[in-house]
Image (tube, rainbow, N blue to C red; front, side, top):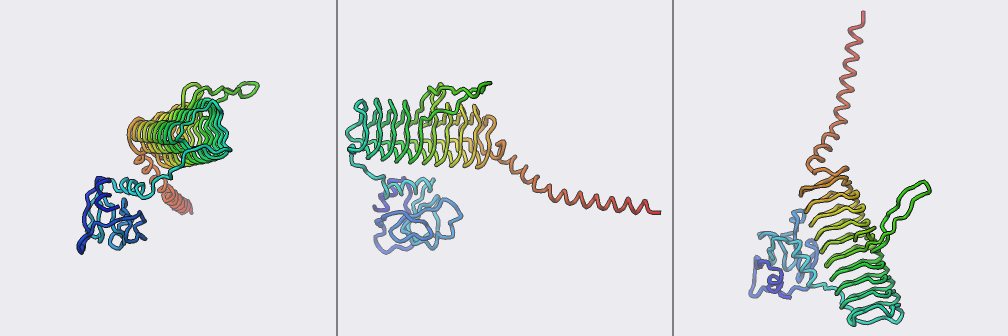
Length: 348
């Protein structure tokens, strides 16, 4: 692909190399890290941590946020270089194209509806009433329950489980081992034990969602659990019954929402972070890793800690806590001085 074609595709400004000898609109063939990139590749810089490599990288082109005079090769200037790099990588490494068909060893109930362009791998199990749309791909060992609807261009990786009455939108990617539509954790305690609350809601996964490996999205007790359009969930994430996310949310590994919690649009939840039940987060809230959200966060901003609080307040508390040790040492020294003076004054 020519650099000029890539620039047009990205909507980026193309700056020629510092030194040109005739034609310089090179054909590029892939993407590589800035420190080890070779001629013919495209690299990027989205953080000043890697600025030291700008003058030495052998890449034919560097995607940058602003023109950088130290770059020897061509520059693709884009306001969001990380996004532009992702789009470039998609050009050179597109998703695998599957051949449509149904493996003889797959179990497909006669009452299921499978589009002719869908791909069903060996040992998949598709239940009665399930509907698979155009170009859906179901990998080996997948279980699809009754009345599940999967829209076009969605991919379900190996050994994932999609329980009954789940609706999945277009261009969704569900990674291996994930379970969607398991019973929510609902029990009513009583003198004779914990009575299970039937989980009769479903799950709705909207378009362009990605759910990482070994994640879980539980069905609602009464209402549906909803994953908003464009949301991306890392491996080992969990949505409890009746939760919902807005559009384009990010949940990092081991993040979890308790029952009926709600995320607004463009919310980011850091790894190992928990959001307690019925809590609501406003649009564009960001919660740092290992935090605990115990109350509504009504304003856009960055929060961290347990309980989660505005990042500035949390940092001030940590700074004060770190001063406690020195303050304790000073108090002990003062006490020792006072004790010595008292003893001296009491001497005959």
